[in-house]
Amino acid sequence: MAEAREFSPQAPIRVFLLDDHEVVRRGVRDLLDAEPDIEVVGEAGTTDHALARGPALRPDVAVLDVRLPDGDGITVCRELRSRMPELACLMLTSFDDDDALLDAIMAGAAGYVLKQIKGSDLVAAVRTVASGQSMLDPATTSRLMSSLRGSDTPAEPQDEALAGLSPREREILGLIGEGLTNRQIGQRLFLSEKTVKNHISRLLAKLGVERRVQAAVLASQSAPQASQPASDHRPH
Image 1 (tube, rainbow, N blue to C red):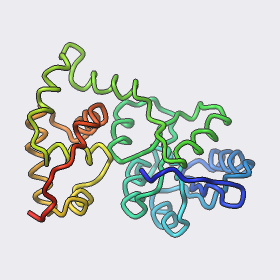
Image 2: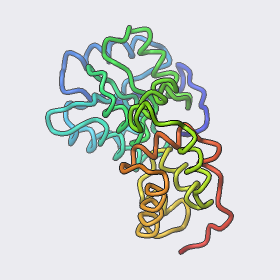
Image 3: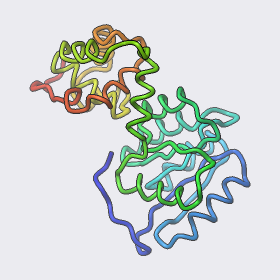
């Protein structure tokens, strides 16, 4: 995520809203616009509308409903961040859904909160993600990873598997944990998309996981090791 930024009434946090319920959008807009350092610059009720309008408005934070009639906010988060890497996405949902949370982590979301959240807490969450911090609870991430690999599976084999990754695989795992797509990883490391895909296939096999999102959660738990850079950034 981008480095911390300072906001003020003269330079407010620019927020974009996506929710298919007009009443919800209006309520969130009124709540946020009442804050002197926050400005709602636009809103949408569908994924298509969000993708068409969002980038032109250059928001700092996008507050996105997870479940929508024509798609989902997680996909919108991924698409918007591919165009605006500094954008902080705050997922807002009525459902406490582990799969959706994992997908949100994978898409690079900065936070995931339930619609039952108090108004003051939502305002605080917007300020938190705008400043470059995460609203993803480490305890929740740990619980999700335990459920993915099975509660009776000891952590040591995972640690051994991480140690068995090559420097390049560890670097790619760290970037997966940041929510980057194969194309973005390739651009970062000067690799072809096909080469990135091959590296990911091998590291998934070494880690004993089947889904990319499982690797992403592992990466978030083992950030120092996973993000260790490879010494060679030449094209392959």
